[in-house]
Length: 193
Image (cartoon, rainbow, N blue to C red):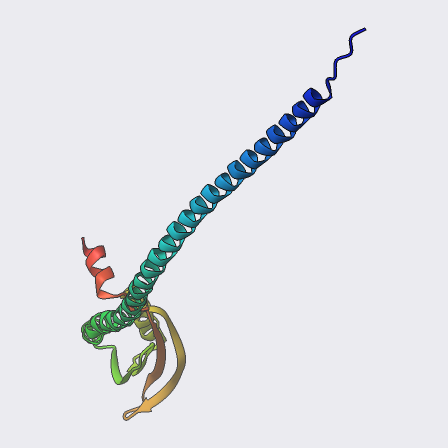
């Protein structure tokens, strides 16, 4: 029987398998390191891009903060201007109120039956004192005042009988008239159209 020694072949095969495994391990290690290196470069580029975006956003934010500060300043000035315009409009609306009052009151008088003795004009009301021939004349005067459109309410505060020379008895009265609120001049122009 012939005997063949296969041990050196098996040993050579085993060494070849070990070399192959070591080379596969080294190649896979090299490939893994190459992939990690590439991924690291990719992440560094991404970080640089994001940092440049952050710097750009911060500069834009700073410019927007300046614009917002300017807008807030303009809004404050606008509120002050609106307040001043409101005062001017109230003054414009109240400018002719006294003249209208003085023009309207003589028209509301009951001719030759009553006279004014005092007229006190305040911001919200007018106090009228006068003398009338009788109670009906004072009542007619109150109705005329209410219809004039200048007052929101007319109230008789007091009426007293007063004697005048020759035995004539007259009525001394005092009325409080609440003025209607002022409409700004802009509202009057709109209502006139």
